[in-house]
Image (tube, rainbow, N blue to C red):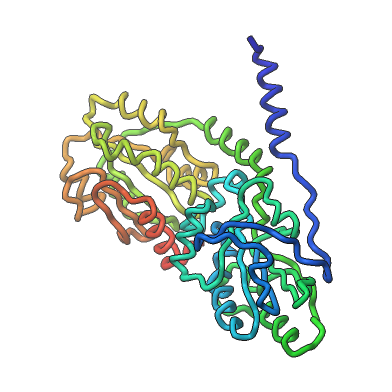
Length: 388
């Protein structure tokens, strides 16, 4: 049997090996485009030769979760449409490994970075260009090109020699018009037969999520699992205060019970939802309406599901005079409690409300939650409320 110290040492070695980075070298101007063979969201497999009929090839390394990539997504799609008849082909390649993305890095995204989620992105944004997947280790195409961030653009000429590499524009996380339309300006120079004035630009965006970054994911998960979990009683007065939401946060309140099948089934998804958005001014508050006698049962369940306060939420919760966001209503007047949380709640559980700063319920749902619908609601309402 291995001793505890040996097990600890082996775990450390495994983490170190998993986190060992490879050298990433971006292509030099004039370099040939590396070949690839990658599956796309349209069901096809593409190689470099798939684009041989286009005079110019614009290769964009991107992903689903990065806010900079999200902001550029529709602009890149429009660029592909506008330049299609100018002998310019655009191909997007997702360079993100699911193994290397920490869950809180999804704070601005409705979608994950797996291949199935890429299909959803392609459909939701009606992408006019192929969207290829390079998220599986060893991410050989992303490595070959030296894609360091998302989005990272490479423009190749007729002989597939590199003419430009860098940013799409200087809009960063702004989905609106950029001050400098870098790729458009560069493409116009190329089409006019002029030398490229800026063949290299800085790439502002999320660093590429290489598979070897999974050590960071493990580290975060270990920190999360070590956090304490608690459940506190809640009365109508506190419920009313929470519903007023006199904070700058978007507040998701879920009413549930250990005797409710859908409540129990969806709880892990709520934990995931909280972790996804916790980097931003967002919090999840769970309130059990189990009988007072079942306090131990409620506490045990929440601890088993492991729903602590994240490090980004702890400070704001403490400033409000609380130590937890998990509660158990143990009072007798459930009618008054219901009115305090949401006057439109008819009583069935699970019941979930999304409350904007100032106390307005901007989204509510009774019954089992749809994860995608919940993500959409949170991000759409945070955008409307200008919560960054």
